[in-house]
Length: 139
Image (cartoon, rainbow, N blue to C red; front, top):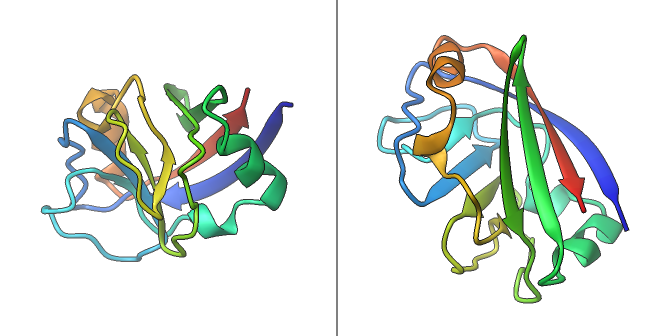
Protein backbone atom coordinates (compact mmCIF):
# COMPACT_ATOMS: atom_id res chain seq x y z
CA UNK A 1 0.00 0.00 0.00
CA UNK A 2 1.10 3.55 -0.64
CA UNK A 3 0.96 6.11 2.13
CA UNK A 4 1.99 9.74 2.09
CA UNK A 5 2.29 12.28 4.85
CA UNK A 6 3.81 15.71 5.16
CA UNK A 7 5.71 17.33 8.00
CA UNK A 8 7.63 20.56 8.43
CA UNK A 9 10.86 21.61 10.08
CA UNK A 10 13.19 24.55 10.33
CA UNK A 11 16.83 25.04 9.62
CA UNK A 12 19.28 26.33 12.24
CA UNK A 13 22.55 28.26 12.20
CA UNK A 14 24.45 25.16 13.39
CA UNK A 15 23.30 22.84 10.61
CA UNK A 16 26.34 21.44 8.84
CA UNK A 17 24.94 18.13 7.48
CA UNK A 18 28.28 16.35 7.17
CA UNK A 19 27.53 12.93 8.68
CA UNK A 20 28.42 10.14 6.28
CA UNK A 21 25.95 7.46 7.38
CA UNK A 22 22.86 9.10 8.91
CA UNK A 23 20.35 11.88 8.39
CA UNK A 24 18.11 13.16 11.17
CA UNK A 25 14.98 15.25 11.57
CA UNK A 26 14.31 16.34 15.18
CA UNK A 27 11.61 18.05 17.20
CA UNK A 28 14.34 19.64 19.34
CA UNK A 29 14.55 23.43 19.06
CA UNK A 30 18.32 23.74 19.47
CA UNK A 31 21.37 22.20 17.86
CA UNK A 32 25.13 22.19 18.30
CA UNK A 33 27.58 21.61 15.46
CA UNK A 34 28.25 18.16 16.94
CA UNK A 35 24.79 17.18 15.64
CA UNK A 36 26.21 16.90 12.14
CA UNK A 37 23.55 14.42 10.95
CA UNK A 38 20.65 16.77 11.74
CA UNK A 39 19.03 18.51 8.79
CA UNK A 40 15.90 20.00 10.41
CA UNK A 41 14.91 21.08 13.92
CA UNK A 42 11.45 21.92 15.29
CA UNK A 43 9.93 19.17 13.16
CA UNK A 44 6.23 18.58 13.48
CA UNK A 45 6.68 14.76 13.64
CA UNK A 46 8.99 12.19 15.22
CA UNK A 47 9.05 8.41 14.72
CA UNK A 48 6.50 7.81 17.50
CA UNK A 49 4.07 10.28 15.90
CA UNK A 50 3.72 8.34 12.66
CA UNK A 51 0.23 6.90 12.13
CA UNK A 52 -0.09 3.19 12.96
CA UNK A 53 -0.80 2.22 9.33
CA UNK A 54 2.41 3.97 8.24
CA UNK A 55 4.41 2.27 11.01
CA UNK A 56 3.00 -1.11 9.96
CA UNK A 57 4.05 -0.47 6.35
CA UNK A 58 7.55 0.67 7.38
CA UNK A 59 8.01 -2.54 9.35
CA UNK A 60 8.20 -4.52 6.10
CA UNK A 61 11.65 -5.22 4.67
CA UNK A 62 10.24 -4.72 1.17
CA UNK A 63 8.85 -1.25 1.78
CA UNK A 64 10.58 1.72 0.20
CA UNK A 65 10.53 4.83 2.38
CA UNK A 66 11.09 8.02 0.39
CA UNK A 67 11.64 11.47 1.89
CA UNK A 68 11.27 14.48 -0.42
CA UNK A 69 12.70 17.64 1.14
CA UNK A 70 11.45 20.92 -0.36
CA UNK A 71 12.73 24.39 0.36
CA UNK A 72 11.35 26.84 -2.17
CA UNK A 73 12.59 25.72 -5.58
CA UNK A 74 15.17 23.34 -4.07
CA UNK A 75 14.24 19.66 -3.82
CA UNK A 76 16.24 16.64 -2.65
CA UNK A 77 15.15 13.06 -2.12
CA UNK A 78 16.36 10.28 0.15
CA UNK A 79 15.19 6.70 -0.33
CA UNK A 80 15.62 3.92 2.21
CA UNK A 81 13.89 0.71 3.23
CA UNK A 82 11.76 -0.48 6.08
CA UNK A 83 12.57 -3.37 8.40
CA UNK A 84 10.61 -5.62 10.76
CA UNK A 85 12.96 -4.63 13.63
CA UNK A 86 11.99 -0.94 13.57
CA UNK A 87 10.17 0.04 16.77
CA UNK A 88 9.46 3.59 15.55
CA UNK A 89 8.99 4.67 19.15
CA UNK A 90 11.22 7.71 19.64
CA UNK A 91 9.24 10.82 20.53
CA UNK A 92 11.93 13.36 19.53
CA UNK A 93 13.36 12.43 16.16
CA UNK A 94 13.51 10.36 12.98
CA UNK A 95 16.77 8.93 11.65
CA UNK A 96 17.47 7.60 8.18
CA UNK A 97 20.53 5.33 7.96
CA UNK A 98 22.74 4.02 5.18
CA UNK A 99 23.52 1.04 7.43
CA UNK A 100 21.19 -1.66 8.73
CA UNK A 101 21.45 -0.50 12.36
CA UNK A 102 18.10 0.03 14.04
CA UNK A 103 17.10 2.01 17.14
CA UNK A 104 13.84 3.57 18.37
CA UNK A 105 14.69 6.63 16.21
CA UNK A 106 15.33 4.73 12.97
CA UNK A 107 12.64 5.12 10.28
CA UNK A 108 14.57 3.76 7.28
CA UNK A 109 17.72 1.73 6.66
CA UNK A 110 19.93 1.00 3.63
CA UNK A 111 19.33 4.58 2.44
CA UNK A 112 20.86 6.01 -0.72
CA UNK A 113 21.92 9.23 1.06
CA UNK A 114 23.01 10.58 4.41
CA UNK A 115 23.41 14.16 5.61
CA UNK A 116 26.61 14.78 3.64
CA UNK A 117 24.87 13.79 0.39
CA UNK A 118 22.12 16.43 0.67
CA UNK A 119 22.22 19.26 -1.86
CA UNK A 120 24.67 21.84 -0.50
CA UNK A 121 22.55 24.83 -1.54
CA UNK A 122 19.65 23.37 0.42
CA UNK A 123 21.94 22.88 3.45
CA UNK A 124 23.22 26.45 3.12
CA UNK A 125 19.68 27.84 3.18
CA UNK A 126 18.74 25.64 6.11
CA UNK A 127 21.75 26.97 8.00
CA UNK A 128 20.13 30.39 7.58
CA UNK A 129 17.06 29.14 9.46
CA UNK A 130 14.63 28.63 6.58
CA UNK A 131 11.64 26.28 6.90
CA UNK A 132 11.31 23.15 4.79
CA UNK A 133 8.52 20.76 3.89
CA UNK A 134 9.16 17.02 3.93
CA UNK A 135 6.91 14.49 2.25
CA UNK A 136 7.29 10.93 3.51
CA UNK A 137 6.07 8.45 0.92
CA UNK A 138 5.70 4.73 1.61
CA UNK A 139 5.94 2.70 -1.58
